[in-house]
Every structure is written in structure tokens, then in C-alpha cells.
Image 1 (cartoon, rainbow, N blue to C red):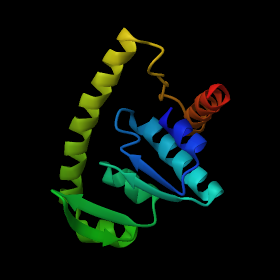
Image 2: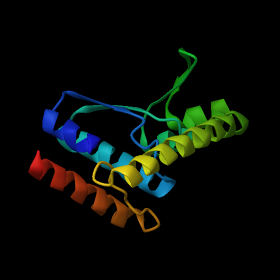
Image 3: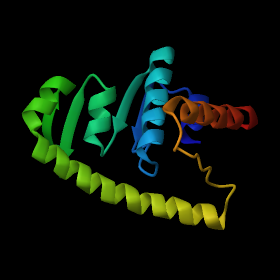
Length: 145
């Protein structure tokens, strides 16, 4: 729904703060691809905050690493992966995964209590199918906004 709200607001810059924090990796890929595609199609700047370094490396031309309010690196993905090193990336990924699990549990609790407030998308399908369902949810929201 947040993606739909952004589209309705039509900002010059899209700021996405952890847009995939409560979803599994397949849905995360689809959502990030959707944001990237919408940004490119509308020619808007997209700034995304992700805990998943691997996801950022896979989708974006520039990666900025920040920890405790300090910039650790600002590199293109190919250079960033070599320079940061596998051990450090694994550490970031473990921290991120624990955070995502906590957030996901929270969303599932909200869904159980108020099913209309949180839409669940099955992500155990091909990315294209998940992306199509997310696009349909966004389109439905926009029609009723």
C-alpha cells in the first residue's frame, strides 16, 4: 500500500525506508524490482534503505553503506562487493535477517487481528507471479484512493 501512496503523491524523489523488511526474499526481489521499474518509468530519483546488502548489490547502480550514522563505503556494486568482503556482508545479512523476522512476526500478528489492514502475498511462486500480484494490489488501491 505504501507504494501506491507514493504513486498517488507523485513526488520528485521516492524515499523507500525498508520497503521489504517484512517479506521473504522472493517477494523482496519483486518489490525492489517494481520500485526500480516505477522509478525508471517515471524518471524519478529512488533512494532505498535496505538491510539486505545482497539485494542492494543485485538491483542498484550505487551502494552506500552506513553503520551507527557513519558512512562505511560509497561504491558501485562490483567494487563494493570486492572491497567489503564476504565476512562483513555475512554479518550484515545475519543482523538483517533477525530484524526482518521480528518485523514479519509483527505484521502477521496485525494481519491476524485486523486482516483488512495488512495484505499477505504468497511468495512461494516465481518472481513474475509475485510481482503481478503486488502490481494488482497497488492498482486496486489506486482505484479506491
